[in-house]
Length: 552
Ligand code: GLU
Image (cartoon, helix red, strand yellow):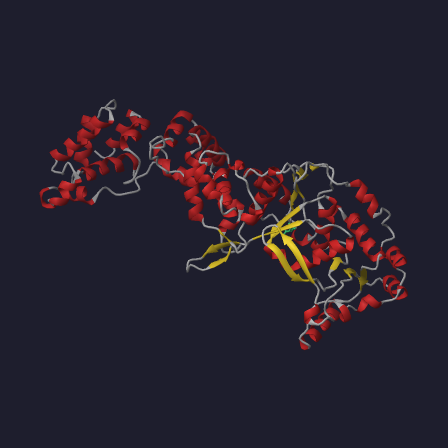
């Protein structure tokens, strides 16, 4: 077979040569050790935690080493393409602090290694497919779906690995004339890699590959034996071929991707080999897992787990710094230790390494995220929290935007209990924070809890509030204020100390705690809240008196 002629027959329109592309995309001029990474999402409109998890690894590897992190849109599967998806990807990642140095942007590409959208790189893939055909390493395959199904049946009967390889790869042996005839007859065809194959070899002679994965160490796997499709009948490349060509020409040094790609790694290694290129360092990240209700570890699922979607964190209003901090704890096993030693350091000062990544499945736990978020938010000033919350509300809860009318008022609210030696950790995420502090705003204030049963039984609610209001002096300090509540309690037959009531429950109607809970419910609508005195100071005298009067 004259492969040169075959290549011209299949790709007459491809005039550029591989050398042209090599010259167009020369090796990058970067400092020694600088890593080039990329995110290659498919524009399906669904961006999930796994994407963010991987993007963090990419971002850290590139930016810690003075390298480049770029965005490539992998849209070769047009069935899954969703309008606006690129915007969603860029915006979501930017929100979480992930910024690209080059690649696809909403206003076209930046960088000189583009085009960064696979659907616009057709000629490049075809040029390299042509090269493989010319060298006898790839061939056109005219097998129809029915023929492939038949082959599969036969393989099942014979208990052989399914697929197109060796003796099953019938089109390998077509002559030039047969190919030409098929093409003239308009028969559709794909281009397949002519794999070196293992199938005819006895078990102990099967060729194996050894690949150094940056997360998993040496991977020892059987070499590829499948005549994998590299160009589909439409001329569009498969993922396998597209990423190999792109990662080479874009001079990617590290490919970070999910463990679901591990089984096809031998195909990629063979493709690199056949193209005569050095493969990048692969970093196969662990699957994100969660513990289900029964305590079993399982993969996060799009259908069952809303927290898989990045939209979830934005809707709920998680602060991006909290999500970053949490992801880093599951990304690197030594991060928490580092954080304890460096409580105030910027997260980017932590030296992220692929070696400290889990290989067996990273456990994602919302409760842990919430705990971490409490600590992270504690370090964010009230003023910054105000800005963050306002941005969130404008997008997700426009009906409450009036909460932000009085900046000083809201900042005082957000700071309640945060300045103490053992600070309160009330804030977790925007949705929860807004609910938490809603009682500070008259239109959102509602009575959510009941008055204590002890007080209601004695019919003392109104009496307590009346006495409280009569003696209320907004300028009282905290001590004077509480002494007054004690007095009211005693006057009405409640113990001044809870322990007295516990000792002699028959002597009292209840204790001072029940009395102050009445005030709490009247003022905040809730039995639990931060310090009442402090809240009153923020509510102001007028609002405080109005709320008490409602019950008298
Ligand atoms: N387009 C692939 C995906 O969305 C990317 C895999 C890779 O990073 O190589 O899964």
